[in-house]
Length: 296
Image (cartoon, helix red, strand yellow):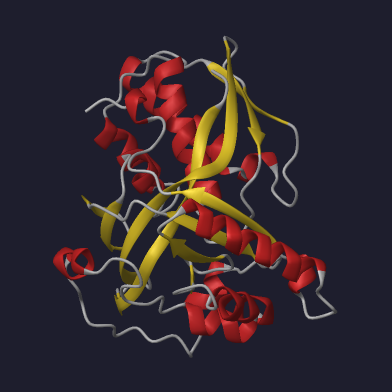
């Protein structure tokens, strides 16, 4: 199976509403899929070996979420059938940055589960795959869910939601933000008032805020600079725990103009960090490109 999409996501808002006794934070967010992301390729093996083709800087093969996802599905298949599961070679054309808040690793893991469920004829339902995905990370079930969603809990309670049909300009500031550092900060507020889907639906562009943004921007000046720059074009915001920053545009031509202006800003940067930026535009998706692989 070649050219399997692993799309990026944005958190259109992200509120921290509390903290559980086990340390996990309670969140409310809306996840938005984009038509920009990694591409993955899977080649079935009959010897049971799961192998990553190529390297991923800073990530050992055994720690790679895609490898872990494949082995998790193998174990589930073996329990169900009593027989060893097939193997796979996994190759990734990596486009999404690590530590960017775009869900790259989680999306790759979800695409692995979706693709191998078909390639290996595992027969798991969408809900069963989501339960497996939750063992890998709180964002993985969303990508298997397959459509834009209002999320609560630690991100695993999902309800489909309509989101704006628009374009997004995204700046990668060139820094990696460790999620644990943001969530452990004493500066992080954890008492945002709970909202409803209807609150978001009334005015989705610019709704709410990202409670993690001030913490990340204080620790990483390039994030603050990217927010300030994109704020010239509209309501700019950080996604996830950082570092990427985005702004919504109703027309593709306006998004393209913002990209060109940002590219000029990057080219003219003089030691202020903007020279490390990457910028791109992406269309909002209504559903995951691999949704047709899912079983109910």
